[in-house]
Length: 92
Image (cartoon, rainbow, N blue to C red):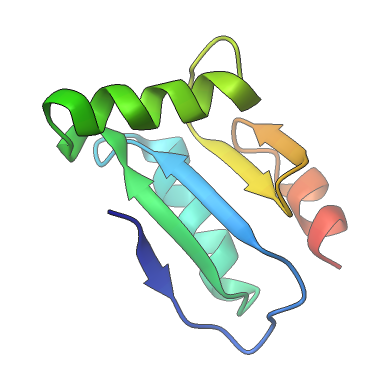
């Protein structure tokens, strides 16, 4: 379900919940790529049926508004939206 992106920096477990059509989601992916971190992402809008429901439940556990992008670092730190300084700090 999730797509893994290899990176030299594997210090954190990173999951990005995103929409394939969202400009802020693309900017977040591009930032993660530029930081050369390993991460996984799911384009929620490309899922269907029970798979989509299951992932939206996961997103809701971290972000009650279920908005995108939702970035989860190490299963506990959550950054909602494209907040470049906050993302850089969390991953430094």
